[in-house]
Length: 75
Image (cartoon, rainbow, N blue to C red; front, side, top):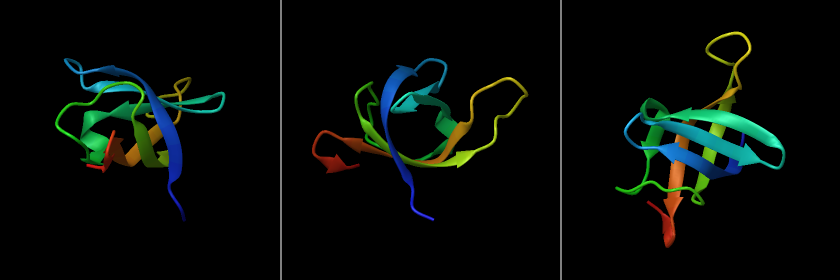
């Protein structure tokens, strides 16, 4: 299955989580699910990821096995 492509719309570095968006859909992303990324992660970066169910009922689906691109291409 191909990875989804979204945009990192928020990132809280001290907490290690944020949100990835594809059109109107939002996905939770946690630092433990990032397999490749530049040293500094900021909103606006492209994220390739797989989708997993929410960790808890009522939450957004999760972005897992994430690869984050820096401005020059894949990290």
